[in-house]
Image (tube, rainbow, N blue to C red; front, side):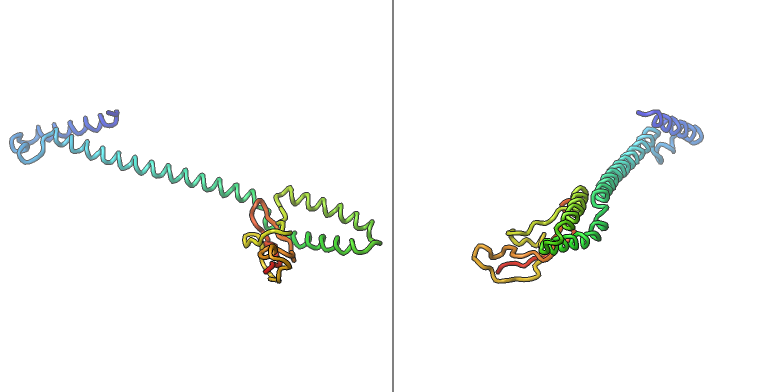
Length: 189
């Protein structure tokens, strides 16, 4: 029994002794509970209160622990994908780079310029890869709605190309394994 419980019991015993001394003992015993019964009743009530408070405390601790875990997870996710919006806004520039390189490769007089642009493009792509950006590969892949958006369905030249990506109109990208832009493709039928 704790020190606090002993103090409570002593107070109750003193109160009961005062009550017993001040009144007639014969009548009090028949009408009211005995001192021991009162003490037992108050002890039971105190124990019930302790159990209730202990339950509330354990629930609060569990709730706080869940909150802490959830916020840590959300914070890690925010840090991991915090640059998503910025990288999404850069994707059109990356597309323009790819188109410029494709057009320069057709013109032999722009070979020196193309070399410089390729260096800049490769450096740019390298930095984006370091930040978790990955290109969604589409060449010869099975059509997958998780990564591809079908913008055209064209007749497949052979049976084995049915349901496969035949052409990529716009490159798709993932950022830390999360799709930030679906690849726009033509699918064989």
